[in-house]
Length: 64
Image 1 (tube, rainbow, N blue to C red):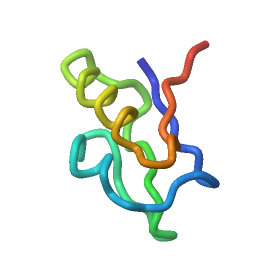
Image 2: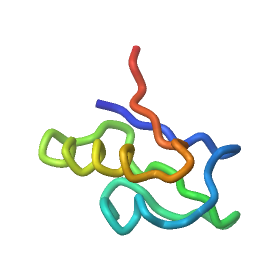
Image 3: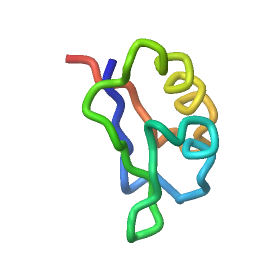
Image 4: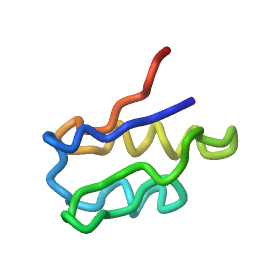
């Protein structure tokens, strides 16, 4: 599984980092960004929770 953060939709609220700090971080612009290329199997549920918890829907699962 891969995830991405739409920087134009992100408001930098930090919900994703509080749910899954292993996957997300706040960058120098105050917006969330993904820290990993591929979400490890043991973190998939946290990634899905972060997607569902994002108030602006800025986090998306990447389907290739």
